[in-house]
Length: 292
Ligand code: L34
Picture 1 (tube, protein in one colour):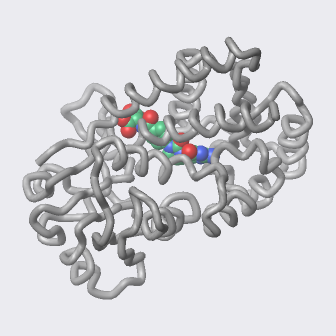
Picture 2 (tube, protein in one colour; picture 1 turned 90 degrees about the horizontal axis):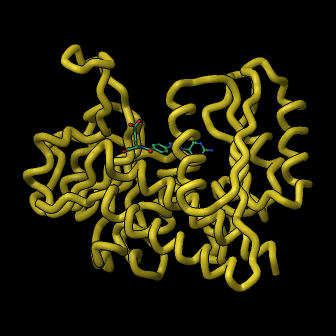
């Protein structure tokens, strides 16, 4: 079993991005500038957005963190997004999800200028991805593809089972893994909460992408010997032995599944770190495209 190490791969990609920013500026380009919008103060969102801003500093990007109150109206949030759309200094915009219940995430995402959609969530970005046109890929699936690429895993002809059908992970993963490319060229099955006999599918999988959002949902009896397991889950469970009283676990029962795998991502220090890499690569791309 080999660990797909998010610290190692993201470290390598961050060095590449840093150098690319230096070269870009040496050629007269301006620093890429990411604007992150955080509504309310969900502790997990605070941590992820904080990490994104920190990465901007580390890689030589400018950043703006716009904090807005949890009771902001949808119309006011959209008007803040519009200000960022019209701010020529800003290259990339992300609105951290989840949003409070009274705000429709679709309406807010639709308001982002697709040229600045570094999350790759806008219908234009997703449509381009579906058609195989150049675009911003959603950060988590993009990060997973970068990780498979780094380890030179040849996915051609493999059976890939994606569990989960969200717009930001499950659905785009099925598209990227089935497209004609490497990584890609896999035969993909999409499973979800209504799938009957899930185990019948996962047991024939060469690659499992677990994006369900339930702790330790994928158990040892569901995984074929030698499979590659990508764990997208980030679930906080109670753990009295920790100082914080909680601990992070993925959607995979890592301890029991890992011995069967050829490769597996850990949680933490796996896909989460790659998500940030995907975002940073998209932001650099946005800056370069906008300069043209
Ligand atoms: N708009 N909303 C928008 N874009 C995104 O790309 C996200 N996502 C998801 C939640 N909402 C979003 C993130 O940023 C999840 N996510 C994310 C980002 C980073 C990490 C995890 C999830 C991460 O850095 N994880 C580390 C540390 C985890 C910890 O200790 O809390 C890890 O090692 O997994």
